[in-house]
Image (cartoon, rainbow over all chains, first blue to last red; front, side, top):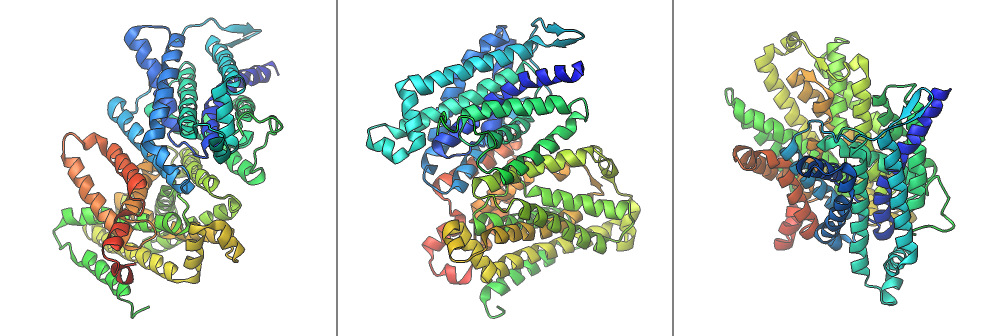
Length: 291
Length: 319
């Protein structure tokens, strides 16, 4: 019994990071109506960002988060101007293909540089013991940092002028333009924020699990699952749904091989899409963060 | 139908494929096999992408599953090639129909997202599925080539069958485009709401198109993996191939029938050139990605769109 409780708690910690990753995709989706298929590649870029900074400069992994966050922001703004800007207002097929193409380029460059071998970032943090069970310190730290980042995002969206503009653009782009909000710049900013979230979540995941260049696909799929669970364009829902997915994984781990979880998560994804096209979690619906 | 020139253009293309390589020209045959596979995958993808305006990111799953079914039927159940191919094609197509009906309520981006997950989930499932050899896959005994007259002549039989599948794919695209069903799909592609209001049963048509686009790639996959006498998850569900199918379809011109074939030819030339060049050998995906990005941004209609604009009369001959 205690074992299940322990793995549930651990699932909660890891799930918070899934939620952070999904916030990146749901943010872009909510504000600009674009599904960012470079999400997985950006998560991997965050992982390798930490790996490179730690191995080349010897700084602690957590000190690498800020540079990764900033680089992610600029990468996102660049992504907007390179791939998405011309797709705004065109059929969704086109923006899907455009971000998919950028994803190919990134994954292609990644595999050409690093191959598909496993990498890991070693972090030593004391764990927290509960009876016979020990929670890794990295898991606790990742969950705490996720809470901090989510809090900062909340303050940005609700307490700053730029954040309010982002919400206005998400609610109605034409009306926002009419009241003098520079919508194009806000869209680029939102794309930057979404990618920065993807990058920083990848950076956190790199302290938890080993990774390869191709790991992004699995995390991207998890982000989609979380996004549909939490409702598209709803960051609060994403965080809650991420934790729910983590709990589910924690609950499932003692009973089935890890390799099956992907199959189950995908089935869950399709079932939720069919049953609840608007998302399963309606917290924040009354006061949605973005939409 | 028989009086339209385009019907005969397809027939001539097939005849050229069948006649081109001679007894000893193995190299040409191998590159034409790849071309036939590309054309098969791209024209079937085009049913979803070009006609209905829905991108299927996991179209390779049909090819891979077809390969698995066929190899399993032949190796473990001892069936013949013909029955294995037919049953695998029908089985994969039926599975696609069930899945398509399952997700028929999804529209736009959500349908596309569901297709991304399919490949991951099927690959994870097959990797764990012991009767199919798990992650090591299934090997076929070389004796299975004996009924076709030994390995050397079996390869020729496989080649002609693949060319036939390619031809069938082109004709399927053509017939669907000329049918009421195709008209429905094209109208879904232009405006799904308007199409639904006018009485097009959009969910059912999407599921049918998804299922139709599964049949021939599955048979091609069966032939392809029978040829190698080996199938494993990493090869069968290699996303590179379905990615290339998307690039090819967009390059040639989505929604046209010549487009995917033309795109396949050009892409294979490009790929051959890239493989031999030292700088680019490792950067195939990167080049494919840049190409796709440029097409999407600046020429979403592809090469056929360009040709139609330059020579409007072509529209009447080349579909």
